Structures are given as structure tokens and as C-alpha cells.
Length: 251
Ligand SMILES: Nc1ncnc2c1ncn2[C@@H]1O[C@H](COP(=O)(O)OP(=O)(O)OP(=O)(O)O)[C@@H](O)[C@H]1O
Ligand SMILES: [Mg+2]
Image 1 (cartoon, rainbow, N blue to C red):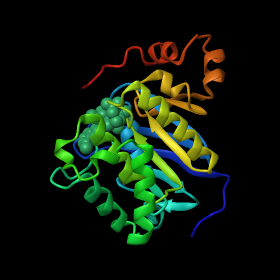
Image 2 (image 1 turned 135 degrees about the vertical axis):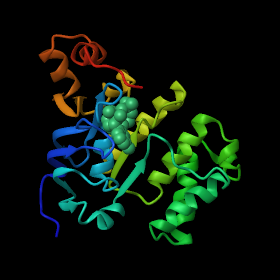
Image 3 (image 1 turned 60 degrees about the vertical axis):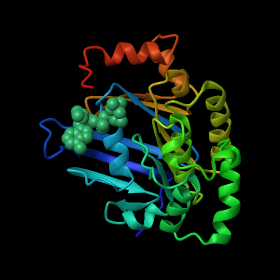
């Protein structure tokens, strides 16, 4: 059953130890994200961002801890919340031998959308993502940035209330990225919650709040200006480098 809360995402002491892993990939994560927030999860490679998003979306079972999404317990009610969540994964999962349109249609069917619901929404997304001309192209023949945008279309087709963009703007050119951020803010205006991960620090600066992970833990959190003031830094990049120091990059 859903429990009323001002937070659409809440995690409590969330831990993940992979069977093949020796360390805690996520080590006691406590996150609270409000409706309509744009929350940027940042951190060095291997700090646990993707693992956290996968547990919150119900794709990965936690080792321990609690998760609530829209008031529903996850993973118990992951099937209910999957209708309200859109995910653009880091390793964009699209079918290379299907066309762009077939890929997005596939996801719309998973979410139970009818043809009448699909068509107008798909056309809207093709326009927003500047993909109109590639509609019938095979996914394998799309450029890297176009594959990424196709993956974003798959994540947004069913009008989700919460969207996870895991490195979603990697490979997207700066002009389109600026355009995307305008779109992200329009989603926010509609009350949609966005959780993004990014290694582009000026993107993190555009979020409402930032959480910095290190070793599976949240080691700093706040609005971009709160973080800059607290750490006496000119930029989030400076804070990232300062607080992530000593981390062995494992990729
Ligand atoms: N399927 C897996 N099996 C075992 N260990 C894993 C698995 N996936 C991730 N890990 C480990 O868990 C830790 C956290 O990885 P995760 O992918 O969550 O980091 P990340 O912050 O998303 O990194 P990046 O910025 O590189 O995307 C790393 O030490 C990684 O090697
Ligand atoms: Mg990742």
C-alpha cells in the first residue's frame, strides 16, 4: 500500500553488496527527493550511482535497507511503480535490429499504451528530441548521440512521473544539451521528478539539488549554491575534485 509522504523517493540505510563484489557498492544511502525536483547524483566512477538508481527503480534487489517510491515499498511493489517511472540507462538498452520507431513502440506496449495514445506522444518526442528524420532508421545505423536520444524517447513515452537519466546526456552535442535542459525544466514545471547522474559538472549546477557520492555513501548534499558556500568553492567541479580525492578510479 502507498503511504502518503512529501517525498516521491525515499531510501533508508540502503546497502548493496554484489555477489561477486567484495565491497559495499552502496553503503547506507539515505536519500529524500521531492516531487518536481531535479536531483543530480554525482560522484567518481564506481561510487555507486547506477547501483542506487537500479535499486530505487526496482531493477536490482537491495542487500538491506528500505526504499519508498511514490509511497510504495520497493522492490515489493516494483510492478506498480514501473508504470510511473521512466529509465534511460547508462548502457542505453535499445534493440539494434529494430527501427527507432519500433524500439519506442516496444516500450509503449510494455506500459500498456494503445496505438491512439502512442502516436501523438511519439510525434511530440520525435520533435523534442529532433529525431523526426530518423523515425524509420535501424537503431544500429544511428549515431551515438541519436541512440542516446532514442533511449530517452523510450524512457519518456508513457509520460512517467519520475525519470531516471543515468548519464543520459553523454555524447549529446552542447546545443542539443542546452535544449534538453529547457525541456527538463518544463518537465519539472509539470511536477515530474528527475534524477540525473552526470560527469558534466555544469549540468549538475543546473539541478535543484546535488548529492555527491563516494564509496557508496552520500558525502555532501545541497543546492548548488549551498554546496559552493559550504565548501568555499567557485564551482561544483572544484568540490567534486576536492571531495573525491584519493578515490581510485576503477574503470
Ligand atoms: N553487476 C555488478 N557486479 C559486481 N560489482 C558491480 C556490478 N555493478 C557495479 N559493480 C561495482 O559496484 C560499484 C559501484 O558501481 P556503479 O556502477 O554503481 O558506480 P557508478 O557511480 O554508477 O560509476 P560510473 O560513474 O562509472 O557509472 C563499483 O565498485 C562496481 O565495480
Ligand atoms: Mg554509473
